[in-house]
Length: 601
Image (cartoon, rainbow, N blue to C red; front, side):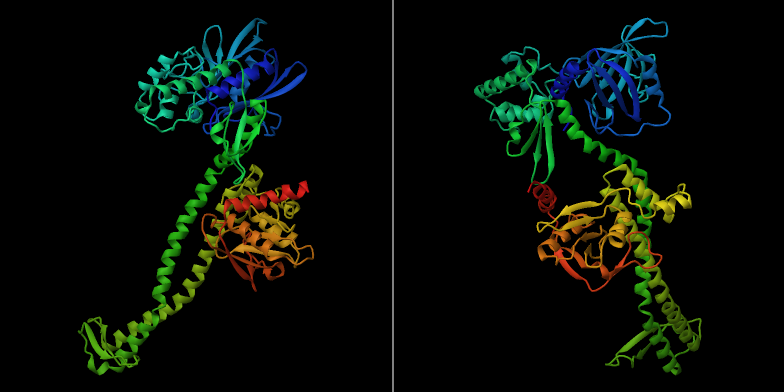
């Protein structure tokens, strides 16, 4: 799923119709690799988003952009404001059929002389970049990512350097007039043997999905060896290829997103019909900008959350690793301390048979009168000690282990509670759907002392204590009961301790980190089918998500208590029942769709 040459081609044509002759009113840089231009053209305001993010590089106009801008604009943003703010867009083009967009802008310099600049957006995965170039001198003014000699020997992207196109891959431009012989010869000379791979490795701007689509339209196996294709099939393949790119040249596009509704999952998107996905549903729109915004909006949020949570996840992960080792060691010590009685027995047997033992003996074999069958037992002795001192040594070891049993049991309980808490935190980070939710988790970790940071002043903290800034998941059961699922500990505590009434149902995975789930009863008896759906959600939003037969405890909320001094999200409960469920994604999507079905009714 990427912006290939076809999508860039359709996008450039649409952007040209919207933005050429437009004035750049404002320039912002909300992220270190992302720009937002406010452009005014023909009485309409447009927001043009450009991102060189290594995971989601993209360009499109958007009507739903709400990121905050930094108080102090980054240097690249300041440079763009100096050179092209208030400038007029005169041309938008795609060099060749590459994943590159060049926006040419005319603006006045300090001497009021009209100058032309090129803003070049290179959509190339981790090598993506946004570069401002002086059009007349072809010199780089600056870029959103600087590439020195130590990173690339082929080309440096630095102020003052000549702009050089990205390395050529010696591919043919598919919108050129390629005849049948050239097409076939090019494929036969490809370094790839599989048909679809030979297509995308031979022609500019063709992604694997487009190569597969061409094979599908020609009724050919995508993985067939290129040398096993006969003349008739090559002819059919060429006709499909030629027809597709004739449509592209004539601006005939079908922007769409293929969706698996069963799993509520995006499969792929393109600017052409993806007949290979005809068994899926489609979102279709005349605007490729709309398609790109729809696809990238959620994907970008997830990527930003992943990036911004990296240090937090690493810190928690390191703490968990230490706790796992600590827990293992404590369990070993606990196992040893549980064998304390054998040392007591050895001491008593030495005392009973002391007349048989002399100093200097390594061991003694005596009848064990504690054994029902009075079997003989061999007791190790320290030959430097007297028989009485050997007995005392065993009694001393017994007393030490007996005391340790109580201490280690208590320490292990503390360790397990800490493990459970931090595993819940890791799960909460995974469940995050917004930066605000991530900030809530970070605030909690600062408060409990796991992460360094500036704590909020007490007056503000007290005001915000019972305020929920972010919303938990909300579902509707097939029987019409509302089900709420917490995404983090603050939401969990709110749902269980503030929102739920005593007659609501509370659910949580048994001995597995997970979310609190509340089923609102509204004074009615909750049917078994709704409890099952609540249990499915509890299992799905837990560490047991990928497991089968996940145990989920459920009880009335009145049976759930929070111990004094317990960490956020930690509760105890009693008189519960347990249900075993396998959290299937299709079943979760059905529950999610209940809201849509009920709202339509």
